[in-house]
Amino acid sequence: MKQAAIVIIIGLLALAGGIALRYSLYPAPETEVSPLPEFTLPDLEGRNRSIREWKDKILVINFWATWCPSCREEMPDLVALQTQYAAQGVQVIGVALEDKAPVEEYLDFVKINYPTLIAGDQGMALAGQLGNRAEAIPFTVVVDRHGMIANRHLGKFTKSELETVIESMVDRK
Image (cartoon, rainbow, N blue to C red; front, side, top):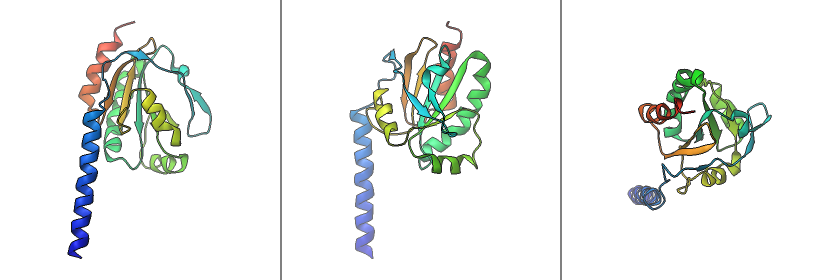
């Protein structure tokens, strides 16, 4: 029993060390401006949604999963920001990195006011294409009205941090 506990502790420490190393070696370049590539993913109703549908809006694209505690912690702030900035042309979009069933089940209990796209297995590749070199979540990109990725954030984005990024963009046309 004691040996099993020691093995588990060593395994958890190794996992934590590996995650920390990955974050330090491959941080997302937060301010490297680049164009948002075009992509299409299904929503919860199964309709294919092109990212171009939200052209001319400031996009907050949040990659998440139901099993990710930090992702779940961010959701109330994303809901609040969608409400706060919708009239100023800001659109939050959730990109779930899993299949439809667990996302639907989770969202039966957690109400959100922004679209959720289902990326499944291709989600992490898309996040990587947008600058997530660590292959970790949550991962958020903020896209300006001209379709340029203006900010990338790996890890939990606080409401005040995201407000600062959005505020710097809402008055620019």
